[in-house]
Length: 281
Length: 182
Image (tube, rainbow over all chains, first blue to last red; front, side):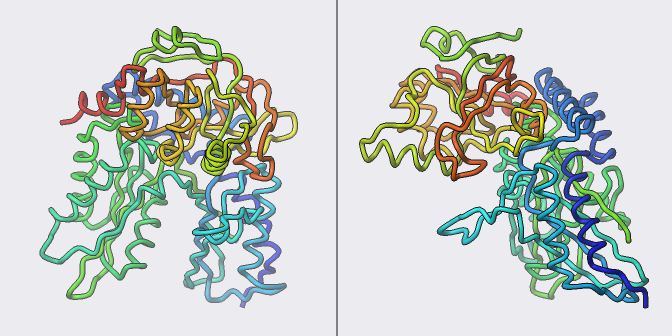
């Protein structure tokens, strides 16, 4: 067994919180540059250029890309040959978030009792932690801050198996169309199909972390991704919803086997500030 | 063409703005988002005095990041305006002349904007670092206990926005989408 002190995890999470919010991943930057070339609306082109300028300012001056530095969504892949020592794992992660959001001058956007007090927890904890146990003796941590504007426009449907691929496409198109300008297009659309209610939303979120330009290895799913991207970009929403061609930079679909009676579909929308960063210990 | 205008706004200034115009704002604007709006409307409903006279003013829907040392304000891009719709008409009736946010507004808000001759500007959602650079002074003037949701008085220079809904009720979120829909 390899021993890892949870203090190391705290330190790594702190740095990931800060770096993910300051530095946009390169694949997203490149997708935005491609979008400038493809955009037909002159205003849309201007907006995309300002978005690129913004991430450059954030990168060079080490400040948050967006003021909505999100809830801290953390995917933890824990090697089964690792033994964690020195304290409580979840508390170590939350301590990392606490320090990252304080020391990185990030906005604290988490409130208690959502239907009543809505009092700010003051340190952006608790993090949303998804842990899976995997082979090996490493710990992989992915930090994906998620803003409220795009999360609010996400949706889930328990479709019937007979709804078929057309039913899925209609639900996705309707969700993006209804979202319109709100989730800060150009967006990335993460779609989960199958599993149970929680599984489908989780794979939809995980789909958002895939590198732009990579497609699902299953050719049928990859075909669906391409068709959906085209259909979404025909909606005309465009950058910031001002009208244009580039409503989405990418559509990522993940599937999971489902119950014989079910076809759950989750659409998780991600704004253009598609922030995520990972580290392996 | 990019128009440069100064705050506070007057009827003449806002009536000269057309949907889709790119505008650089200069002068004082106030911040306010969900919690601050709720409080402002509660104050109005109780008949008490507002912490700021809204006549001719602009409210920017933003909850900025904390300022880093040496910075005036942290990243400060717009939040989704639709959540403020339920409070907006009351503020427009108190003389509010402009709003900065992102995203569509409700029909009754557009009607109230036409009646009160007000304009809705969109700033780029997610461009918090770029927009923070246009803020030259920032001071909390009400509800400091709300943290990022407190009302700040901001002095801005060449703050870049786009006219999303003008005083004639023309709406870029509709006209733009119709133009590019296939």
